[in-house]
Image (cartoon, rainbow, N blue to C red; front, side):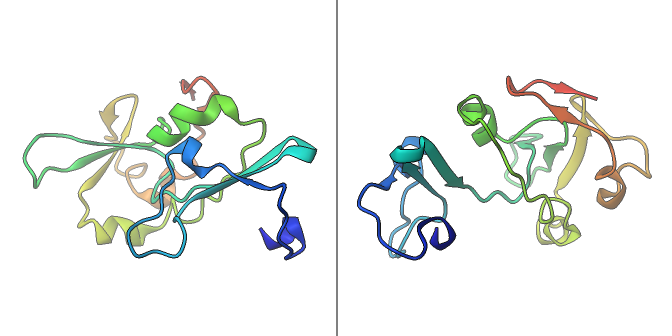
Length: 143
């Protein structure tokens, strides 16, 4: 926010994170995600952090179940709010990080078109990142 406001408090800037379900966790100084509205320029700047940029769903009901990591489906947050954005900038570096797969004890199984990826080479997250998936504003996908 400092880059936008020059580090100065601006009374006209509106905190609208609540419109996107952003709440401050108990004991936190500020929410993990935020959204600010700049009425003078008709601009909203939103910051949303996600461990992945795709839909994650449990494969079964057992608490120890694996999770389908749908590479061709946006996460719930994007599906819900994408139609409200004119411009979307994504930082995908953390999405392709192998560390998160290790941290989740490899319980995320990559899927495309609703099915687990069978291609052994594509199933490696480093190779999957070069696969062309386009997510349209209505949440549908095109490959």
